[in-house]
Length: 118
Image 1 (cartoon, helix red, strand yellow):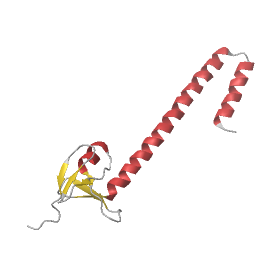
Image 2: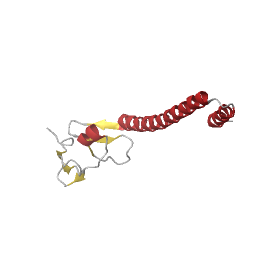
Image 3: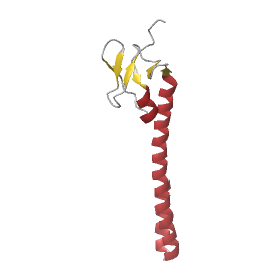
Image 4: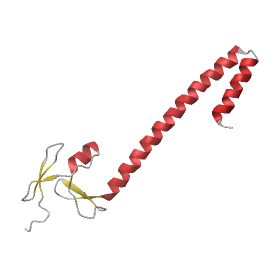
């Protein structure tokens, strides 16, 4: 027997006993339990999202230039470091050739200098 089934049984007993105060208190407790259940569901979803972000964060490789890559990508993809830092969005940069990249969201222009020799 689950929590809500047991609670319904207690409510029925309070109603049959004709104890209005007890019945009202139990209804209030029922509403509080429902609010707590909704909060648990919300917190679980938030926790899942934070764990996902943490997993991605652990997989990110940072560079001097304002782009990032993921260690797990088979072929390195350049992502906008600004969009990741600001919105936690991994947006692949658009390649305009000649080491020139642009972010489709924030419109940042990025010059990849990681392969240049000095």
